[in-house]
Length: 107
Image (tube, rainbow, N blue to C red; front, side, top):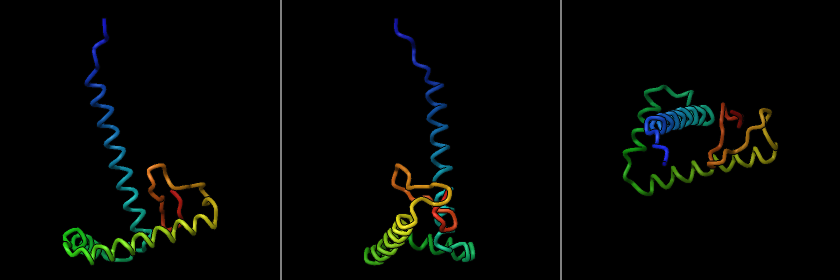
């Protein structure tokens, strides 16, 4: 006879995984703010800029922002490549995101 599935345990595991992903995303967003020196901006200015970017329908404007962002990550990647690993040994994660903390490239 087959053992019945423990749906409660599966739901709990999925909930925990979702919580971990949200936490990691929040940490990465904070690290990105620090790496881009956006932490020097007021919270109101930063929120306004993000709202404007999210609401923008202008494809050319969005493409310009995309190109600037891609160039930022390429520069960071090249800097890490020249220096090898950072002092903490951080490398790009398996999902392709780059770990940033104050622009130092460490977690």
